[in-house]
Length: 213
Image (cartoon, rainbow, N blue to C red; front, side, top):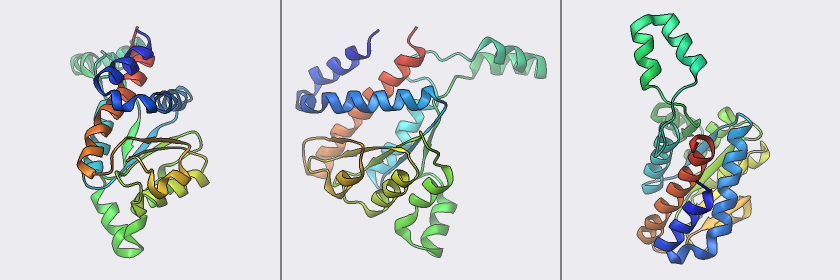
């Protein structure tokens, strides 16, 4: 199945996203390129966007709509190393698209907030996890969340590809994004309602590229 199918399906259901079709396609291509070279994705946001960050990781790190069976060589190694239990793992484990939600590490986040600056909770993790060629996806309905902006600034300095998912103005994040998906709307709830189908289609397109056959 071609990835254009998923984009066309998205636009048919959410015609207000038509003007963003090319940016969504560019974001999917950036993710595919990053994964193809063995890199990973970092994701961050606050409040509802924090939940979105965790949600996206859940779609990337295991099968979303495709079966992602592990390789035959890995199956053999599992079985050889642990017999029956290894065979069970070989049957149940799935190939992952590496992704880290920077919102999920409560001890680290609170340590940074307490010891340095709460706005640096994501930037500090980018400094630790980020490698050139990785992608960071920053989510903010306003585009003005300082902790997300600081993460993007840090990411650009480290040669990560920066994708922003915002409301229609793009906010201050616009300045630091290589690819900006600024969905129409300014009310937080309405913006977040459109973020979900956008990141779902990105996950579908990436998964289809690697596991579609």
